[in-house]
Length: 220
Image (cartoon, rainbow, N blue to C red; front, side, top):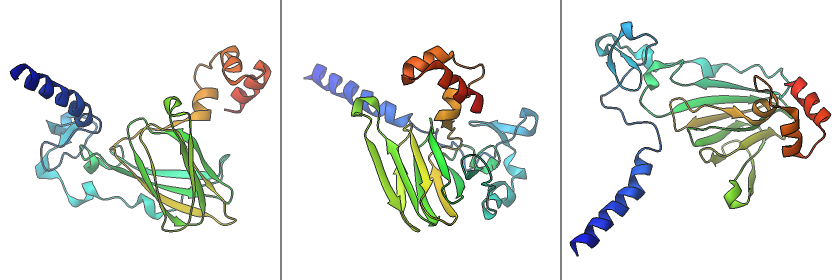
């Protein structure tokens, strides 16, 4: 019976430990305003931390999401980010925020966040959004048309996108479950890597002519 209990405990630990380490570490103090140089810091908790005695409200404040982003680009969108790199007060808190502006027919192209789940709310316009499940799940597409006030969740690590279906600009706000979620835009990564991936590798992977691959690489 004792050996059975021991095995049960080990099994529970095996199941719960990955969940405990799946997101950003929990803070060990009230706050830890991140700074870029250790000379400016006193405590270490994820990053070098600003001396708590010198912390002010400004360390937890940002107004960058008040301004529309420039959508005059190839994809017709702009992502304005508030994360630990531009708002030190987010350090160790496990959350960040973005504003996404879309031109008519603009899109936030297929991409993934390696370290975060994303929850998005539409503030203005109509968006087609979706994500694709993993190979093991059959690469199923989960898509929905969203209007102002609608919410959609993109699970951590899965490829997802948003597309403005309307003839007017659209705006969305998204929260991510990491202070620094990271982003991998699929087309830029595959066709715009530095140095470039051998076109023959991509030609075989995408079942396309190598010259077409070279043309795509030149675009990125």
